[in-house]
Length: 238
Ligand SMILES: Cc1cc2nc3c(=O)[nH]c(=O)nc-3n(C[C@H](O)[C@H](O)[C@H](O)COP(=O)(O)OP(=O)(O)OC[C@H]3O[C@@H](n4cnc5c(N)ncnc54)[C@H](O)[C@@H]3O)c2cc1C
Image (cartoon, rainbow, N blue to C red; front, side, top):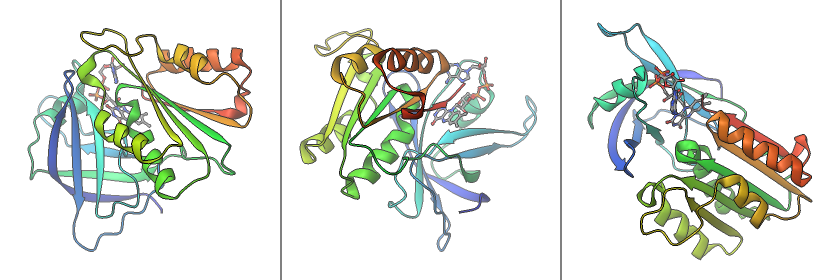
């Protein structure tokens, strides 16, 4: 679908984790057709205020295209950030103007035997969309969700991903928490999880999403492991 401008309503706001992260459910006006591909993003158009000019910022769509009539965003408030501090003031029922869909960070076909998603924090957003989509389509591949967070309470959509893993044996989660409190699972950075759980690069694609520093580390590790550049795809948030 060609990118357009749409007015949406914030139907639901959920506070997630401890790091000022929010889940927004944005609904379209009845009759609106908003088709997108899993993994794409949209721009939020932030209006001018006395403090700043009008700006736009990209956010990955965190819901799959088959959930019709709305999109979900999952975003983290950034200290001093223009867009996220504006979004932080919004309430359920407020309007938000978006532009999209945009981007080419979507599942590459033909699908390989295994897809490995590697993310930290809100980098999970496009993968939530892709994971739901591929599982619902019965895609014939193994799917790994290697997901790093700082604190135990920050594992976004944890119960949802655990329920998917229980339902679909070919879907596997590797959660890792770098500053554990009561967490008894993995604690090393995501690049070490890639090495530990995915020993053989053959017929696999790695998708990485989040901040550049993490993406660079994961990419470096994947290349050292024998993945080629053609097997690695990433979306940088900063
Ligand atoms: C394709 C794409 C998809 C994206 N999807 C998401 C998403 O789903 N969820 C999400 O939360 N963000 C996402 N981002 C990042 C988002 O677009 C903004 O950059 C981010 O929300 C900060 O915007 P801001 O206006 O509040 O901060 P700005 O005013 O732009 O920046 C303030 C300062 O914070 C730094 N900064 C920017 N982003 C971060 C960050 N995430 N963590 C720490 N410091 C930062 C900047 O370098 C700058 O110094 C995405 C970015 C891209 C390119």
